[in-house]
Image 1 (cartoon, rainbow, N blue to C red):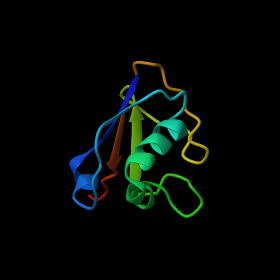
Image 2 (image 1 turned 120 degrees about the horizontal axis):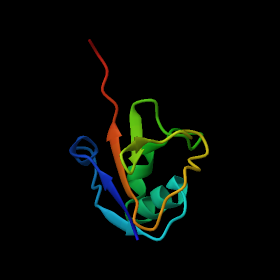
Image 3 (image 1 turned 45 degrees about the vertical axis):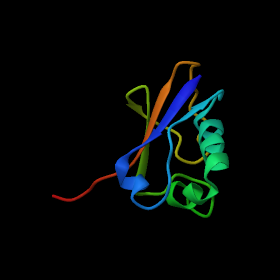
Image 4 (image 1 turned 90 degrees about the vertical axis):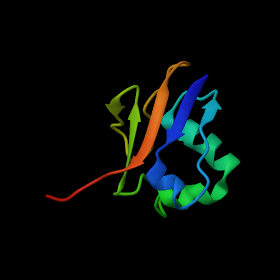
Amino acid sequence: MARIVFTSQLRRFTEAPEVNVDAATLRAALDAAFAVNPRLRSYVLDDQGHLRANVVAFIDGRRCTDRVLLADPLRPDSEVHVLQALSGG
């Protein structure tokens, strides 16, 4: 099963447990995590259901490429990390 992990930045605002999911896409994995804690959805997705501008997801160490449909594929043993993107200079 794929594993989805939320970093501590998101856990400061709401419960964001690690979740093991049987999911073929990033969208399906996130939906499974939101089923555990529906409040988490608004911290990760915007009103259109896209990744928020300040959130980034990495799948097996690579940044997701589809921020709109979240259709990036997952392997059964994938590891997904969801975190707030940092900016500044």
